[in-house]
Length: 216
Image 1: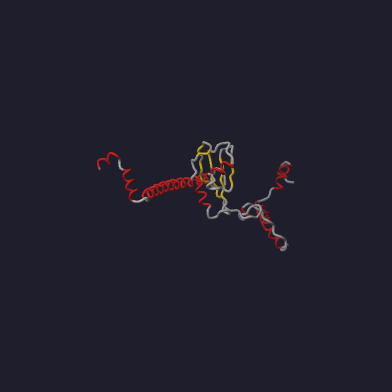
Image 2 (image 1 turned 135 degrees about the vertical axis):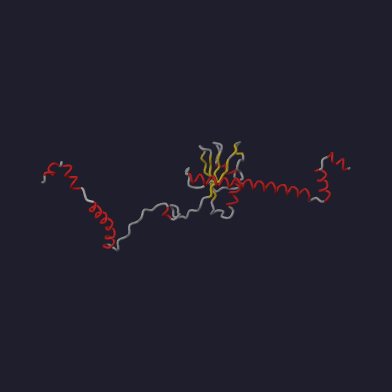
């Protein structure tokens, strides 16, 4: 044993024995990398290792192997705390949601529409439900808005929700405007149908009484 080695403690000597050079470490890595390939060559008939199954690995299928469709969900907020599913179903009877989930503690609910049950009419039903925004339910004005799946409060989800509901608000205004115009046109058409006598009478009613005296 050399003079330097004799001065080293037992702990230092042990560490020196286990310490490897950079080249040795690289050789160990290379051996580990080649090990699976060698095993495959030696046992070509051995079954391949199964990969861990993840949610994505199901190919969009549920736990029972059934294909999952996109969910069409509408958010309902500002609900009375004591509201029931029956009351909500009655309030939204014109749109007939397939399933209702209530969070009574938060005063919110989710209306779900199943595309398998009504593939062609689902959009119309959702539009009808969205028209009930700011309607009264047990003396409370409720909010009815579109939502997106996924949950959480991530920035991307909140941005998506914001853009969806801004677009919805614009569409809602246009729809109401159109309904008002159509209503006034129908009313005008109904007033003009009885004939010339009816139309002249309607015209006379439209003229101010003082102006009618001047005409006479």
